[in-house]
Length: 312
Image 1 (spheres, helix red, strand yellow):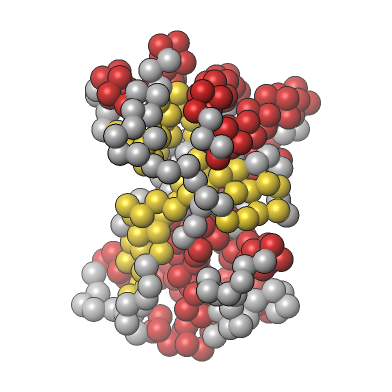
Image 2 (cartoon, one colour):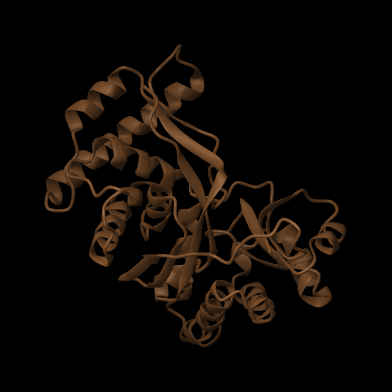
């Protein structure tokens, strides 16, 4: 058995903001992928994955018991496959903000959920919200709390526009141009990030009135503006807003930025060669970069490997 492939994702805009109802924009990233596989000769890695899936299966059993109206799984088949050594074969790096647990959740739902909502049917807003709700509950096993967006993106393999918590829709993106000078890129911090501790810091900060004010008047405002300008292909507005967002993150989300990147983050804002932002919850993993001139950004960041995600 080899299940269908599920891809990683990149949340271009909306990290943390979507918790407070900002807009968000999430795109599939086909460079990394994962699939459920049946045990060949077991290795340390496949056994570790199998054990992790067994823990997840126990969680899903409890979930089904407490919320049978939400989702029902074919648990018998799942347990049987796990007994036969099933594991999740994935190239998606864990703790990098590109949705490793999201792809796993999508794969398990796709294979074992009964009366599942499929990608082929007419995806009304109600169905999308229902899927997102199911995925949020499933993915909470990995992060303690989840918006359900990563698995949704992985499952549908479509760019998703988040208008608010209860309003998500598939969307089109401005066309890519491999000749374009502008680009969105990934920068590898070389550190594995942990989502749960970062979310805890954020939730703790939310108790502070000044932080909440900054979030509403700056962070959410610039995030929304970035989403709008990106979708409309207005690159001038996009870079102006991304710069403001990058500055706001540097000033207010320092714990989420690995220390050795504080300087190059500031350098990008000062030189205008590139602007950096969080990719996922931060604390390590990838950092997302935006530049109007890819060659200039590469020269400025010559000590780092840049992975281009989108060119325009």
